[in-house]
Length: 630
Image 1: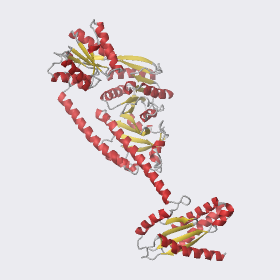
Image 2 (image 1 turned 90 degrees about the vertical axis):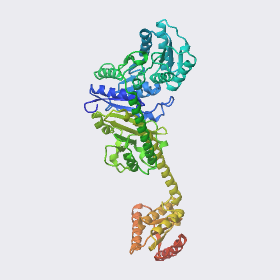
Image 3 (image 1 turned 180 degrees about the vertical axis):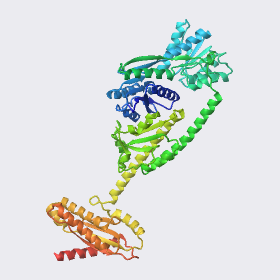
Image 4 (image 1 turned 90 degrees about the horizontal axis):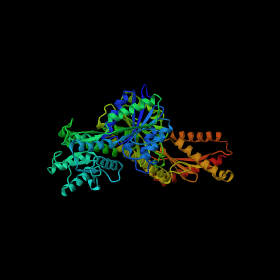
């Protein structure tokens, strides 16, 4: 539960489809009557057969948490993949949550089946009994498609029940699409074999067939009756309006709520309920339709929506291209704030994706980790950063419900969609729409798809830059000491001279004392430790703005801007660092080094070779002096 509301999770696919929007809106309103709230877990495209164990889109359904979810509904009829549905159901049952499966037949669930044949049979019977039709032709869907085959079988059965003959020539295939359906009817016109009634397996084909017949001067329904199936909105703006059949979202929502009420009251949570489709008569069969929309207004609205879609798509694509080039996630957030469709939403990505060292290909594809990074929240005023210093931006997988809770309690339409790139789950996007308009729903795949490619590309580019930097450092830095090697020093020395043009410099040459004795007595590993220690002392004493390089062996060089007292400070810091190390190292030897310091004049610009030559003389003089003192 969340607050005083039971929470129901809906697992669905392609929320951007109009029929999905209509069903969800109705279900949310009906659930509110029984003190329930809906959280929608959505993937925007179908999952291919055979990819049920690897497709990153399935990661969103793993977010269903029994700590706040009381029951789960899965729209099996929208996934078109029983293996996917079975996998989701098994995961949910493992969490000991009751499941209602819509349009499927699964064990250990409460199944709601749809008797689509009932409405289709009612249409054919209506044409026979009420309009005296004896001459039929069926425009079926795809060959060997379960829904198409069911309607062919129903068509055959109703004809036989009414003592009318059936043969295969009475069936054409329109593939559920307008173009193939029109081609099938054109063939009938050419062969002069148009029947009294054309029964179409869905509304899209029926609308296209009516338009074709009108263009050929064939009147509907006077010359030919046309019927469809599904009851999509467009049948009410067609000319004439189309007779169809469907299961209304209000009917299925009411059945779902009744089942949930039984489950929550402790009654059985398995079983089967069948909902029959019903016929909706309209003008295309010769009956008087009860409802009609203005076709011009509907077309104008559709055109306007399409133009807005195009403009938003262009804007989102441009933003996505910019996001891919971002150096850090703070820049991403600023771009998302500028992108006008990205309102009433948030974005959480798995913590591993934040770090430049992370390779997406190395991340597990099975599930999210234990922590998410709050990348974006349209309600937040504070900009996020991509460092682990801002701990408030990280949310555990158990706690992200607290980001959802205010919106769910407020009655928003709350939708969660996965973020993924090349089948790697990166996180998820959540939307909280106060207004349940279709325009909000169809924006979801736009936004998610752009973010998938943009963030995935950006994370990969950051990782590539990180690797290039590592490679560059490998070629520019000495692996033992971390100081620049000769190549790296020469590159940085030119920049250093440009930034400090005309300023006197101190050039320090440093050489470890007694390296041969350390190697011979205690081993080369100890010699490496001594070299590394001298390098750290040199870097520490010369300061952060210095340039330090290992010349080779135990010889090192540092360059820094000369200031009054800087050389004395260097020697003090250098010797102090070594003294402290020797006191706590516990080694049988002491680490020491000889240094020579050369000062350049303001107009002197020494080459790398000249630096070495002049400071080398002073360093060996220092080494000779130290030996004499011993």
